[in-house]
View (cartoon, rainbow, N blue to C red):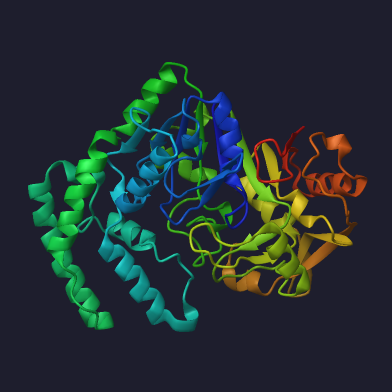
Length: 424
């Protein structure tokens, strides 16, 4: 079976754990969008792995990992992840392939990201300052882009870098009065990148199509969440790629029809990092409780996440656009200890109630949630392995959400470890 796993909220839903679990029955795991702005956490026993570019299946030694063409590759980050896993006894030789067509994040992209955010002041978008947006902007602009394949011919790359850096220096100097970038320093880093990564660099589209013909089971892993999708999220407070399942075909060169099951991942509540509308946000003691109990701090940035109640309007929307077959709900254990838990079942916008999500940020900012309240539970769920053994109030909560989003919840996370998972 070929599966695609995608986040249904504003990222940080727990995709890493779900992908790691499903990878046990897969041959290949493919990361198809985003860059090092993603943070997928996998917990195995007492070890926790924070992955930013490597697919979450990388910690399983028998899995082939693919970083596909639409991923913005930060070579420093990727090399560091490879070395970190190697130091823990997990080797990626002959089982990691990076697309030769993937675009490369270089130092000037991170500089541009930082300068742009600082210049926006209170109107900043809230990026991770990892250079992902500027890298994608260069990709679309074409004239100043660098791809992994360019590392194969360093002489030509040096000429290209000189042209790019000359342009960037003029731009940064004129707009931000920033100091000049040293092209030689960037080139020397590229020499190191080539030495470390060229053995992993191939035509991944060709590899994937051969694997499909051979009957391999492929797991496609999305980064960020569908509400951050460039085209279908809460623009402009979005990421720079198609983070819904709609990004999968273009992101790796494989048609969506080869996927047998699309699995959406959501938390039992909602979180968001950075700016942008968030109708169900609880900027109060409830939000603080969820943040503390769920350890809601960014894997990539360490920033405190904004927390709020589960938004069924938003998740109904994302399950629809991503063609979701079933849902994995993570962090149910985090809500234990609350006297009541709420779910946003509709919005009130301009005095009218609607259950249809609007991705228009200005309109969404005015939306007021219409809540359905469920009785809470006090029991610790981390040892529960069967749905029927959950407290009745927790089961009612799950079933209530299923009815609102019209999708079955077939996987339930009750803790960070692999075995803290309920399958229905």
